[in-house]
Structure formats: structure tokens, C-alpha cells
Image (cartoon, rainbow, N blue to C red; front, side, top):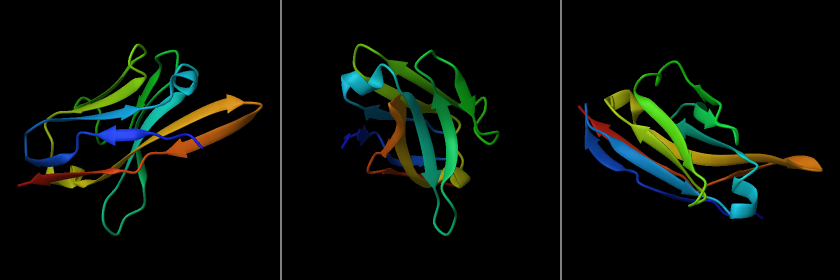
Length: 118
């Protein structure tokens, strides 16, 4: 079992910023695609952003130009910098890791609440 440690959620006013962090085991982090997803009440979980081990990023249209995913290989940590937050960004944000060793494996963090007030 791979344990991901998330932090950084909270309450912020619209227009504000937050940074989420997700730490993974080093042996996994170096080869994994790191991702952030979110789930708002009554809605399905949706992809927010991903970043491959090679640095290729992908963003949901709804967060492009506002959110930035990054990774610090020295700290085995991925980040999601969220700027210009909107009330509709309110959700539980989950970190996930996907990697392949013989077979493809995926693990999820425990989730962190982000609430944006209007």
C-alpha cells in the first residue's frame, strides 16, 4: 500500500489563493504521474491537473491559467497552486499517483477540503 500525505486545504475568500501539497514515497514519486482531482457535494470526482515524471502537465479547462501543478523531486512532493479561486472550486481535493511496475497501479490520498466563500 502506498500512502500519500496531503495538506494545505482550508477556507479562503473568492479571489484568494491556496497551495495543496502531496508527499509520496520517494521510490514511487520519481516514476509516477502525480495528479489532483476534486469532488464537490453531489457531483462526480473530476480531474483537475496531472504532471508526469517528465514534467508534462494537463489541466481541466475550468482551472487553466488559475491553477499550477508542480513537483519537487528533492522533497518527493507535488503541489497544486490555486489562484483566483472561485466559489465553484469548493470541493474535496484528492491527490493521486499512477505508476507502472510490472502492472499499472494507482493510489489516492485522503483528501483535503477546500472551501471558497463568495
